Image 1 (cartoon, rainbow over the protein chains, first blue to last red):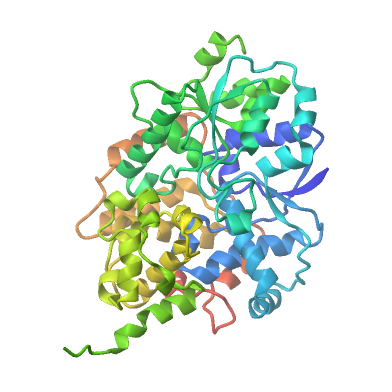
Image 2: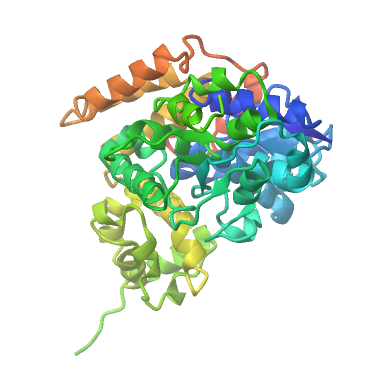
Length: 282
Length: 199
């Protein structure tokens, strides 16, 4: 399995452990990620907040760069994923826009590379059975609240996930690792995203509510599929006890016995090692 | 009683045209408001905003803080029984507000602006210099917003720095020319629709 890899701006910085664990897990599972050459920022939430055309044009350039390889584009960040989907949608359905973009960047849109989130790639192309077969250290006893966040599954008509209110894609992966996914109602609630810098009190409220809900549901930890969600839940939680927040790829790495896992986990604000030690997992 | 039909009654049709949505479908069930994570800090809740658009209340809508406090999580649009996606409507309202000189939420605006500047400069976002620009923009706002959240931000920034999660040097993409083209205004060969984005 080969994919064009779009790491996004945070995969080397604020979400470096997401980037590294994604790459290591894919390597271990035989998924080849070929980094898109000279990729640019997708515009995150800022481009579409201020300039609609720019929000389609920035990821449009990445789609143009990905045309030649023709492979699906694997993306770890849900915001990058959603912006790239919107840009692809505009190129696919708006002929005038497509012509303007093609003229400006000198490419010909084929519609072949599809933007895919890395969770979708691992859960649906690789599949829980292949992952289960690679598990050397089952995560028995670990109760995980799978947290999808907002724009990974929404808007459903563009993303096409299993269920926009109650997705189970990540839960199935957690089961394959030997962990126990908990039932809870905050799977797709928003953490406050970029407001963490502009109006941080709101993010403290939203993130704390999500963490509290996971604790109430009996979870030991949260598994996230987003660099902004993870950092918000990890650093902005103000609840009576601290709850570790993993990237789902780190948990896969842990179960596959990848040696770098402890290095990734050292990047977290809430130290997850006491929990993992208590469960006999490190 | 006579009802005067002024030009403001076409406000909703402009919003529809630009967003590709149909705001007149709203029958005010308020599912959007119920599910909105930031409704508690908005002056007008999402459903109220839709109603105000239907009623042509342009000044109130474009001058509201609600359009700046929407985080674009798409919960409203996913749950709307009339299939109105409010997130693109909010995008259009912000752009109309800027074009017509309504004051944006200063901190939210400063952040988006700093973020786009970073992309225009490097092709990618360089967090550290972006944060410096953001904090400077906040300081220059009247009244200054610099100290708002400074302590918690500094604590968070220091934590990230210590863990090696903020790179000191920016990474610049090779073909910056492409990105510069995209930032050029529409009508001059580029695609940008925003006034200030290219200044």
